[in-house]
Amino acid sequence: MGNFSILIQFRFLYIYILIYMVLGYFYESKLKLMGYYSFLERYFGIFIYFIIFVLILNIFSYFIKCKKKKMVYEIRVKFFILLTLSVIFLWGMYRLELPFEKIFLDEEGSKLLIEKFFYQYKLGLILTYIFNTLLKNINFFQMYILLYITIFISLFFIVAKRIRTTIKNIIHNRKERKRLELERKLIQEQIDLMEALERKEKEKMENDTSF
Image (tube, rainbow, N blue to C red; front, side):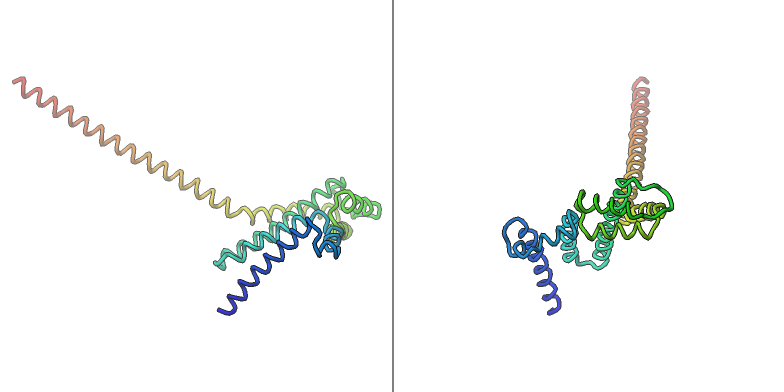
């Protein structure tokens, strides 16, 4: 019970800190006066908004009671982060017009990458450094393949459940339509049979009255 109470307090402490950090950006808070946001903008750039979004997503995991569902949710969040980074790097490679060849980033290309990623697109020092380091150690061809594979795998883990549910719903709806159609045919056959019996009964009565 004590551990549960501590966990609840930690959850709300996390939420309070996150709210304070976000709201503090919009007024002269202590964090802003300390240069906290300037530090974040320098190292993370506009990517900080994505980080805030991920932190907000993490809040929901605290309120998922089922361990299995919580694990699945956290895995999907991690793949969402991986997907976003892969898309950014792939987009950066196309923006830099890097060829689909087995060559590495040279010094001139490194300067152009830093100029575009850090100064023009404001993606921060950390993301610029990671991207620059990857392209210096992995050739362009392998990097393209790696990013495409990562995007595909990430999308699969993120939307696999939705796709499976959609397929199951389609199959269920098709079976339901067939069942309703079969019931309709059976009912119609019963109606036709009743009408045929009524006609025969009526014809029999008319023949009897004629005699």
